[in-house]
Amino acid sequence: MSQTTTKARKQINGVDVQRLMETVGAIQEDPSLGAFEFRAHNEWIDGTKNRSRIQDFYGAGKEDDTRARPFVLENDEPAVMTGKDEAPNPVEFVLHGLAGCVTTTMVAHAASRGIEIESIASELEGDIDVRGFLGLSEDVPKGYSEIRVNLKVKSDAPAEKLAELAQYSPVYNTLVRPVNVVLRVEKA
Image (cartoon, rainbow, N blue to C red):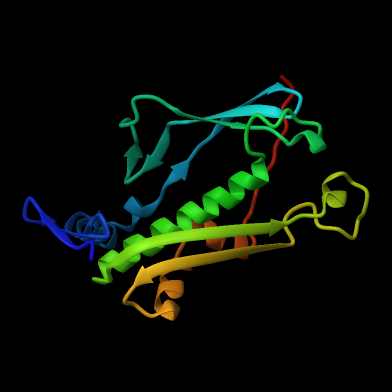
């Protein structure tokens, strides 16, 4: 399996378990270190296309300055939704974020428990009726009505245990419980 020892530090699933446990210990000693604020800065380009820049965030008790350059992500819509199909649309990014977070969460929580994982692959599907988004029906949700996450995990651990670990995912929890979103519009 994937358990290796590198420079006298134990790694499980590619995760430095000692560093992970040190981080957990520091947050247990000082819970304020667990408060993070992530940020995205977005600008409209044209039509249905816009671009986000992600670089700065607050975490572990201070502003982070370790990212030398921003991550740049573009959003667009498929042609059928009047876009130029030059990038994934925002609801596809939700699926990407959920897949990445569930995977990362499972790997890290498994490592902290000594559970080895050889591979994880996932397929996600989400159902949206765009009549809600287009304002054509008050009875139709404006977003996803259901998201299905199918994970294929190669590990000796039981599937039920792996599913339990995946459910620690912050993105999963953001989607399955109400979250307060404050939307403000200011005139430029």
